[in-house]
Image (cartoon, rainbow, N blue to C red):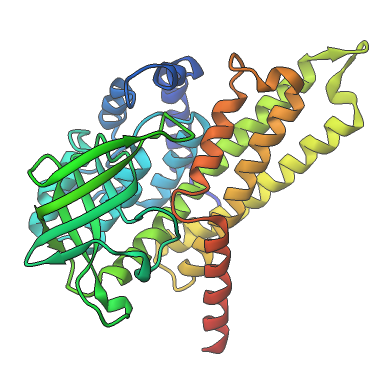
Length: 375
């Protein structure tokens, strides 16, 4: 079993890295961080022109028809560059939900628009505090009309459409949840931007008042579909986190080699060596788990639920660990706005909550392994 990427996939990675180095420098990220623009529109357009937005979308729906391994490669580079675009909400969540459960008409309407960069999508699941769970879905759907609110919704303020989880039953079971597709530019929708830790990845509160919606997938199958979507997104986000962790490690290493204190490179001090070594171990462990997740995702293996949870856990820990220690390696300078360390720290902590907390995924891994062993 070979868990490495092919030569063509490595070439794609090099191409993506070169493109992002030119179009998504830290200076470009800061323009969004410090400015009023919610995302980098030119970068989004460029990603579409490069075919990166539709890399895993079938050719019949306007995509490149490559696959999830290629998408993992792109995701890693997006994480390295901490790209200020709605890539994860649109590609990992909305597009995957459409691929899993969308009708032919829904796919033809939205997938080509995603691939071309003309549409931004998102998943409206959370309703305030709490992890993903059927009991936490309070927004209701009846006769094709939604009522309720969702927050936080990733990139909700700029999204054109949303996949919305709604309650359609009262039995207390998973079958009470169904999914709906909503055009956010239509009536019955109110959107309010939220202040969050990482302004380059916006969050919003979306309120639905007698909002018309069309079913996505079969009634009562919403939670089953969501579980699949979240597992796929967990693997893809893990690659983003691995990319960010690796870049934070590189930043710390480079500074340790350049910074002179007491007549020596600070990288020669044992405390700094230990810190960098720990960062390397956590990033390498996360990469190993993410590669396993990529294999399971690309082959739709039975091991995907466990592999996705393991990738999510290790990558979340690695990115947070490396981003935090990168600041420590930089010392007092690492805490300043002028240095780029805080941008990775922001992204690491924001991504740690995007699909549910670390504790949630740890519980998921344990539960899934228990069920598998019991079977």
